[in-house]
Image (cartoon, rainbow, N blue to C red):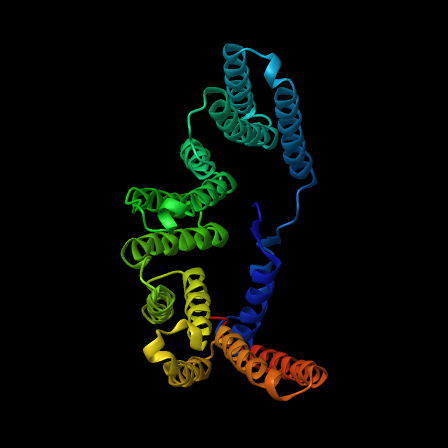
Length: 358
């Protein structure tokens, strides 16, 4: 029977839990060994590495050659070269699928690279007026069906990253327009990620995409408001807290809970500065910081390790803010170093107690 691939960190967790179950007499002695034999730690494939790096180098070499001779090639010949290279890479990948799957996949990746580079070259050739971020949108759309058909997590990850680059375009971030069509693309990428086998990295990018889309809506309404930093921060603070609390109902994956901690922690740090608040309420940063620290302590009591990190950041932020005005710089760094060592010791101590990261 083929062994199931598993990450080394996940295998350690599995081993620890199986030992606990054996010690508690929940499962018979020796069962953990039998279960352990069903798994094998994932290892970096030397063959895959060679093939994938080779495909990237070939793609870079071909495109470099075309680019260096771009002015001497006619428009029709340029377009034909790009089309032939893209088609050839995908046909080669298809032909090799059954007998040489790893080599086949490297040709598909080569096709993805050629497709993206071709977009930029064609835009330059016909002067289509497409912005840098818009080109990444078309690159994402072009390879998304390939990710679905091949069930390939890396192509899907590339598609989601290209979409994230696109949504950071200034017309969206500055509130000129809301890209409502982005909702459909985020949903497609999310469902594809679920269908082909959920990966946390792609899930994290999907979360960033969703937050960026929310940011475009906020910008559309408040970008010209002088108090927009506090408005942004409060909205993302609420979103982050809601993501964290959603864990209690088991409605979302852990990666989105982690993202929630990052979001509300970042928003809280921003709101802990006096200058973030409107002029009439600039005093509010102190009571807000106190309330947020109490909330963080509540999360720590429930066993959240990420909340310990957030608490350390908040304490260190106020320490630097206060100490620079009263202490020599050498003492600031020395005391700050001891604080960080103390935070690290406390964090390690809590991890050994078995607290959940999120």
